[in-house]
Length: 368
Image 1 (spheres, rainbow, N blue to C red):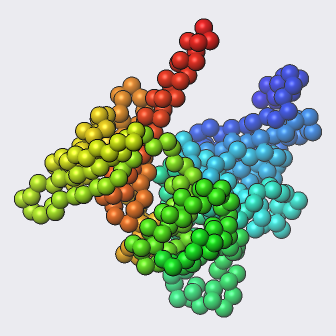
Image 2 (cartoon, rainbow, N blue to C red; image 1 turned 90 degrees about the vertical axis):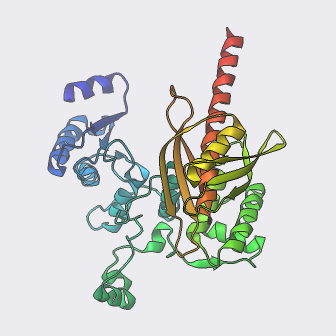
Image 3 (cartoon, rainbow, N blue to C red; image 1 turned 180 degrees about the horizontal axis):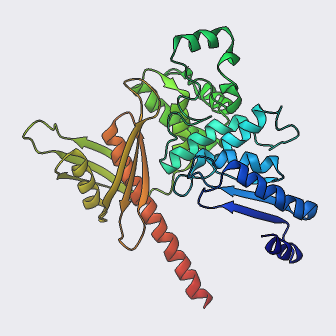
């Protein structure tokens, strides 16, 4: 390894990345390897590390590497990555900050108040929620159930919390807005959550907020985060769901779905019968849009809390067997409506990808 590093430094490399690609090493081993390489390289280049989490040691290994001379760490939000994932950015950043007594002099320049909002945005886009007991950003990371813990936290937060939830941008899911809230209050709240949107984006998000406020008694911060994430990641709407009507699925009945979909300025209405409500929804959307998809995965979870919590639906659909599955997201207090939105979202992503490939191919021909 030293011979290889010496050769690439002589060839001009300024950063040398040392990976534990299969997550096999222990912290003591990684620390020793990095110390040896750092002593050899000196200040000729920066040592970088890339640790996987197959043994649950990616963060521990990364911290051991920092202790022994690494000055760059490759990591991911929520620890996302191949197999068991990569080192989690939020855990490394907060370990360095919380244990300054041990990691004195180390700075990441990460804006830690953006950690929780960024985690929520990434999980919304990827459809992969951190497990509830995930360090730093898990739903239970700042929850206390046992009586002695609750009593201790109420008397002095640091009794059982080594960091503040507010430090990472989590305001305990507070209730802030309702159906009578105005545009100014809405924009101000988004700013407090770390969002700086253009006027057009604020207007569109506000219209969706007002619709949601009519359906929900209480609006939580996570509801707003979900709305904004859905708005800023929206792709061009080739097909737009205007209306959805479902039949009463009583025993022995025939589940059916009727939709009105807007396409190129025209509204098309049709209905279909399915083996179940979801099947009927997918069938009628396929019929109206003229594109058939095969559902590969379906997931639904609650965005916040309460009986009227918004449902976030994630679908993975294959529209072309030669292409990978396309993800679609849908948000609504009605799970079936969120399902329809998610399926049409996947369809719009597929159509957008086809158009992009067509444009690239056309440009290539012109170039030739």
